[in-house]
Amino acid sequence: MTTRGMPAAKHRRGRFFEDFRLGQVIRHGTPRTVTDGDASVYTALTGSRHVTHSSAMAARELGFEHRPIDDLLLFNIAFGKTVPDISLNAIANLGYAETRFLNPVFAGNTLRCESVVIGLKENSNRRSGIVYVRSTCYREDNHAVVSWVRWVMVPKADGETTVREQHVPALADHVAPDQLVAHARLRSKEALEELREATGSADVWDDYAPGERIDHPAGTTVEEAEHMMAARLYQNNARPHFDALAMQRTPTGRRLVYGGHVISVCRSLAYDGLENVLGVLAINGGTHAAPTVGGDTLYAYSEVIDKWKLSGRTDVGALRLRLVGLKNLPPDEVHAAKVRQPDGTAGWHPAVVLDLDYTVSMPRRPNERGRHE
Image 1 (cartoon, one colour):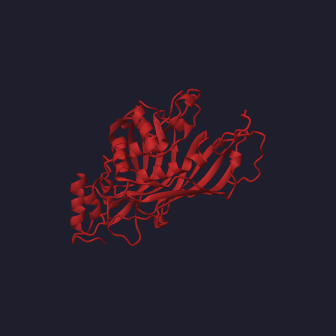
Image 2 (tube, one colour):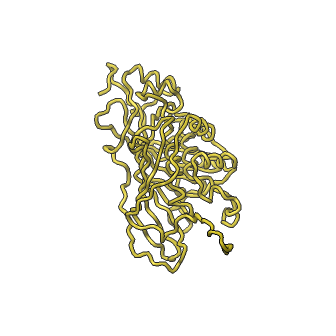
Image 3 (tube, rainbow, N blue to C red):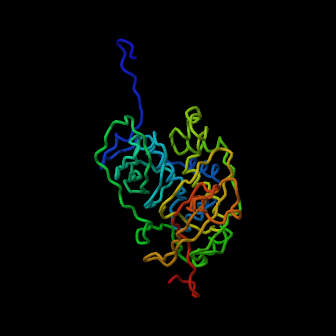
């Protein structure tokens, strides 16, 4: 009810399924200038130890002018920009695909994001639908820094609304090697030795083989205050992560840890065994198999899916990895991410919370003359 003579209250309800249309371009608000403070808080919340983003000296040896912002911090900040317009009302964030890291970001860069609706599919219950968007984040110089596709289930505001234009986009299984952009460079055998000394590991691209599994030994308990701080760092205001009162009426009864933060924590755990990873080149696909809440302890293991040489590069190669995140069970107690269910079908192991397919860059071993071929 509006008081006589007073304007109606402004209500930012977010978008519902019928508010989206194919080809719609959405320019997201609040540009964000990234700082060294953001990078430090991210390290404190995730325990990230990747040398490219930890050491200014190592970053310069790898050809960067300054220490770049962690790739997943960049992704989470960019993702957060899209939440108010895409997934504020989402029932579930269903998946990612075709994520490409295109240019580095440094403290002082200002980021802006926009999304294009590339798919719409009404669910059979007619009360919700799936929205597919391709989002791109840009620096202030208009260079794209990361782009990705995701799809979310969004309710309708009015179940009687008919959505006529529907389309499910065809998405690539993975980002092809010729589309990968690796900015880190090793200019000499000495640079490789310095990197190995900095990381404490001698393993390089040549030492990994498809089919290999790496159990990461450490676990991290996600505290309630930490995952709330992470959501604020990423400016992700989705209700499942922020609003404890609203979440009391859901099956979990609690706020959920943002899935991108689960990815960040699990990748930080994956440092042990993958110490010489120089950066994330792509996220090929991912599934949040089960929710994570404050108090859960995360573990992880990795599998090597494939490895590629990169065109025109002899100093680094690409590893395609599968990162499996687990809650409350160490990796040596989980033999497979999927297990046979009582009805004979394959389903997720009850401890699995994340199954992420992604590609990273890693140094290659030079020949006997100290040269890359």
